[in-house]
Image (tube, helix red, strand yellow):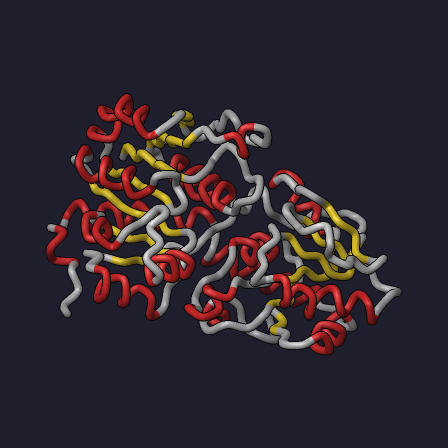
Length: 358
């Protein structure tokens, strides 16, 4: 199969989780014998932070603007499938162009589904509009659960399918390194996540000065009051993620408000940490127990006290069982198999058969 992907970024993981998701998925997809072309808008904020400028699993090409996409018309038309990702600059126009030119299966991969739906509700069509959703044969969604039926019923998607983020289990694995931190957090600053980070990491750090903490990620405001025992790492490239997790007794997962409201929106960080057998403390949302079993494979924390209690545990067996689940159900290979299966099914069936009633 020849797949063309127009995504936010493959070359740079700076300030976004899309790059690591695409890298894992497309590397595994190419490993199944498929050909992949990734078209990425050349933007200045990624230009200085490219940590994968020349991937070995696909062809990566940068294009300067919307007009330049016309130069890729033949590749888009000749592909068996064309995927457009969320947050692609000029995404609505890109989607229309793809739907006009592609002769194969077209799909939208939403790595931000709850955020997307919140944008649509307030008339914000930054990268997707209601009018173009029915024109995609498939809507792959970072979010599962009831959201899939809503995409078909309210927005006319012919077929909405959950395609959760995945992890490259060759890169993310247990490592024998010295543990430096009792609790770590890896994530770009987000205003709606910050109160949870305050409650589940910064306040535990203030109450447990003998323990060590770390927050890795860019764009945090200068006015945050970091406790003395919280180390800051401005940017951690994916190549260093596994060692980061291995050096953590526990790691924290914090979910954006829109994704908590939707439920069934597991972050790629859950799968990365799980693959590294690092015990996870997470905020609570509907559907998380479909990913990891609370108490056995993950700690769900509502309060500062919950985190402090968890830090007093020896949870190595929890990390090991979480890794088993990731290997069985959430590896890049499993996601690539699903992508291949769903694309093949879409090619075999008329799009009208997938339209939900109502």
